Image 1 (tube, rainbow, N blue to C red):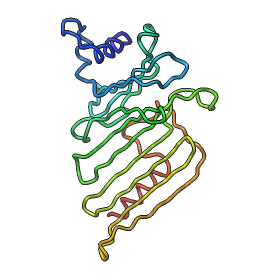
Image 2: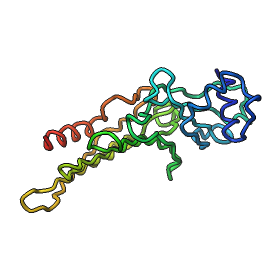
Image 3: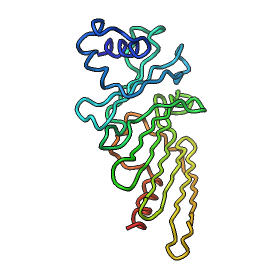
Image 4: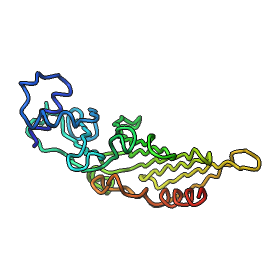
Length: 222
């Protein structure tokens, strides 16, 4: 499997003829959703190859694979393989995407726009933390969630800096009497709550205060 992933990352950078691919590699390529080379692990040379692929058993979710740079560590094992980490597929909206954050972190975006009347955007901010931080390995250090209800013209946004513990939530609701949007803001300072990356799954609830605020938002709408 390791050689398959290495060949896959090479294929993303340099197109190969069909006859150059093994059968497992050819089967894997259509499952590739997004790929990004980003320097996440300072102790390693070069960048880490991060790839999102559709999960073979649950294609409405995506798996995340993180490899060291194949030029500096051609025989190394994957640094991380996280199953069903994000929503994927037409029934859930748009395909997830990878993005390099301005602070050097990896952003994993999931977006649902096509089903129902509550489009949402969710972003996980991912970093590699060394032992000096008291946490060794890949972790989710930031979480963003926003949703909007078209019928009631109401919206909810939550930003959770899990590294510092700072939480900011904003709820906007249209007042039917005044036809003006009323916005409520909430801020919290909590203990840092970094989450090991492998514990995140696509179908789980929003963490901590964001999940509580989202529940209150939907209770207000209905």
